[in-house]
Image 1: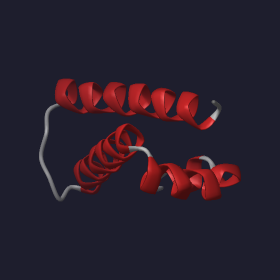
Image 2: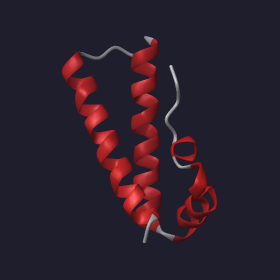
Image 3: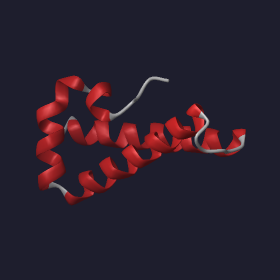
Image 4: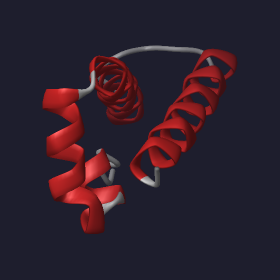
Length: 76
């Protein structure tokens, strides 16, 4: 199962991601939430954590929403 952390999703924004993580509390909160959600999805997909299909779908929807919001902040 492939990881989908932000540095792999947006390698062109590595410096800006780091800059925003330390200077923007809202970005940092979204960044942390994105990574926790991504890790939870990864654990479910690897069988380390159990969840039903509806819950997994909700997590994936949340992840995409967070990713869109983070991307918008990176493009300001």
